[in-house]
Amino acid sequence: MNHDELRDWSKRAADWAHDYHASLRNRPVRAPLIPGKIANTLPETPPEQPEAMEAIFADFEGILPGITHWQHPRFFAYFPANASPASMLAEQLANAIAAQGMIWQTSPAVTEVEQVMMVWLRQALGLPEGFTGTIHDSATTATLSAVLTMREQALDWQGLTKGLSGAPRLRLYASAQTHSSVDKAARLAGIGQDNLVKIPTDSTLSMKPGALAGAIAADRAAGHLPMGVILCAGGTSVGAFDRMADCIAVARAHGLPTHVDAAWAGSAMICPEFRALWAGVEGADSIVFNPHKWLGAQFDCAVQFLRDPGPQVKTLGLRPSYLETAGREEIVNFNEWTVPLGRRFRALKLWFTLRAYGLEGLRTRIRNHVTWAAEVCEALRALPGVSIVTEPSLSLFSFACGDDATTAALLERINNDGRIYLTQTIHAGRYVIRVQVGQFDCTRDDVMMIADVVADLMR
Ligand SMILES: *Cc1c(COP(=O)(O)O)cnc(C)c1O
Image (tube, rainbow, N blue to C red):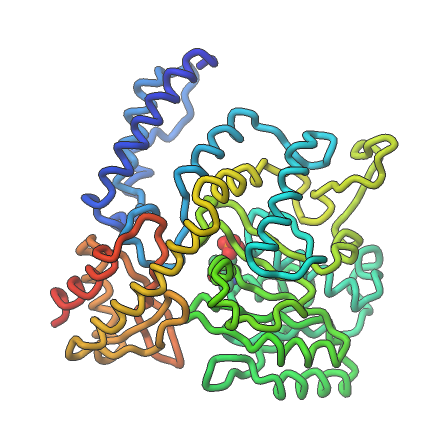
């Protein structure tokens, strides 16, 4: 395939994409879960000779039955992975350029557009001046970066060169409502899962600040080395929020840095009325949120704000001679802020999305989602046999219908039905069905259909 053929096929792909999106409401949201069904249709060996694009494209359509339609307006599972049309266009252009923005010199525009987008987003979220940011592939990577930085601050930068053997026992704190990416970071950073201390939560699902203070003091008394606190702003399970101001005050009193995981809920903070949920966040040292969830810049795009990038760059940055830019020691090389060296041009889709919809357009979408989630929650509450287990946190709530087995069986019927897609979690020992509203193009009718489907399928 050459670039002339690419032009023709790109047009065909654009037409295909248009028809695909137009047809989504008529497709079952979730793919049937039959292991091997797709793999068995593919040859076991790679082709030795070139194949015609016509055949390749036809086979691409053949794998669609194995696709779960994340851009379906009735996708209410997990969290959204919104891809606004403007973001898709930006990705096409970024793909065409295929620049690798590992250092400023390898494409000044890639770094500079990213810098400006971080300033835009900081203002959009109402964070104070002084926070700067960078884009990671995922919140997992941002949290790992923050945890590695906390570790090195605690070890006075000795871990990077000497390793961890002989170091005191490092201790990291978070509530049980934080995402498993925090557990993963504790494992990967050499801290060990057993040294991630899960602080109990109160009836509002916030970490208890007093329990946090007690755990830190007990660890110090035992000769351990507390290194930092991870706070939850919109937990994945049921949308829990730690009380930022109180927990950050405890961390600060003990001289510990804080990292806030707002991967999902951070997007909602473009609406000033929701900011009370994370009041005090401006005291954090690091904050991650995923525009690739609710905002509309498609995966992958995870933004980390830092009060002071210095410690993270000192932890993750290496500048071998082959990555130097002569006479430009002061320029920002974003690879030094994160784990991978290579970087795609991710800021472009933020730029296109923010401009094509404007903050006001994006706010309207998020406000609608929150309002409609509350409405469908009431419609479900009114159904005999349904109990709301957790009330809406922004646009996320959970319900059950009888015991765990009955609820699980209902969920299976819902997802086999195909009109909507919901997923489960365990809350306070109970199997519950999560509902989150957030797909970019969903309408109130799409959301209210959740109650119709549940009413139809309850037995
Ligand atoms: C989705 C999510 C993550 C993980 O996000 P990735 O970008 O996929 O790594 C972490 N924390 C929370 C609260 C999330 O909702």
